[in-house]
Image (cartoon, rainbow, N blue to C red):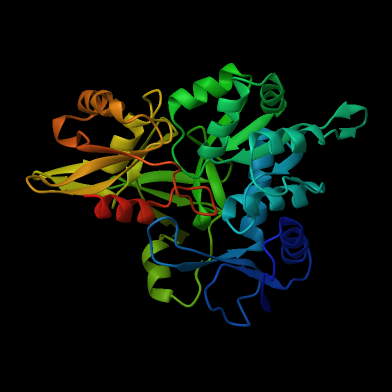
Amino acid sequence: MRLERATSTDPRDLLRALRGAVLGAGPAIALGDAEVPEEVPAGTAVVLTTSGSTGVPKSVVLSRSALTASALATAEQIGEGHWLLPLAGGYIAGVQVMVRALVAGRDPAILAGRFTAESFAHAAGGMNSYADGSRVPRLTSLVPAQLQTLVDAGERDPLIARALAGFDTILVGGQRLPEALRERAIALGARVVRTYGSTETSGGCVYDGVPLGGVTVRSVDGELRITGPNLADGYLGDPSRTADVFPEENGVRWYRTGDAGAVAGGVVSVTGRIDNVIVSGGVNVSLDRVEAAVREIPGLGDAVVVPGAHERWGQTPVIVTTGAPDLLTAARAAVEREIGKPARPDRLVTIAEIPRLASGKPDRRALRELVSANA
C-alpha cells in the first residue's frame, strides 16, 4: 500500500487524509518526522512516529482494523456523539478523536488555534447538533494540563464551567490525572473518564480502570501487557523491536507496555513506568509514584518530578512546578507518608511555565536538563 507523508498539521487537512486512509482506499498517511518508505503493508492506515517524552523515535504501524476496533469499542463504552477535537492531530489521542468521529459518520468540531479556556468554550458553544429532535451527546478528549486550565478558569467564570459541564463525557489521558483535579472537575459538573493506553494500543483502551470490549490486560512480573484487536502491527522497519515488544504466546499477540501495574477483579491499576526509577541511597524510588503523591497537594497540580544529582545519595527526586517554592515541606511530608523517607524530594524548582510537547505531555527531557543546569 502507498504511504504519503501528511503535508499539513492542520486538523482539517489531517481529517481529510484520515477519511481516505481509514474509510477509503488510501493512501496510508505518515505522521511525524522520521524517514519512511513509499510502500507499507496492506491494510495500514497510519504510521505514527513518536518518541514520547523521553524515548527513542519509533514508527508505529496502525491498521485500519485496529483504529476502527478502538473507535467502535469506545462508542460501545460511552455512546456515540459529536466530538470536539482540542488536541494536536499528529498524536494518537488527536487521531483517535478524528477516527471515532469518522466511524460515527459525523465530522468533529475543531478547536482552532491555541488552546485556552475561552477558545474551548467558544468551540463548545457551536456544537448544537440534533438528531430526531434530540440533542446529540457532546464528547471530547483532553490531557490533564488542559483540564487544569478549564477547571481553574471554570471556578472563576460560570461560562467556562457551563461549557465544561455541557459535555456528556470527557476522556482524560496522556498522563496520570491527579485525584484532586478530578474532584474539582466533577464539582463543576464535568463527567470525566480517565483513560490509559498508548500509540501501540490505538490510544486509550482502559477507561476508569476497565478495559474496553475485546481488550484484555494482565500483569506479568509486575509489567502490564495488553492484547486485543486494537494493537498496532508493530514498528516500521524494526522487526527486532517489534518481536520484543509484541511477543506471541499460544497464538496471541501481546503488547508489553513497559508500565508497572496490577489487575485485580478486572480493574487495572497503573503505578508508573518500570524504567522511571532512580536509586537514592541504595533504595529504588519510582519517580512516577513520587509525582502522583506530590500532585495531590493544592498548588502542585502541575508538578513534574525528575531525577537530580545528589552528592550524598547519588540521585534524589526534584520537583519542577509553577507553584510556590514554600510547598517543598508539604511535598516531602506527603511523599514520606505515601512512600517512605528515601523517596522524599530534595528540591523544588519554580519556573514560569512547564515546557510541553505538542501532545500536551510535559517535556521531561527539557526539565531534566533544566534541573541539571541549575544543580
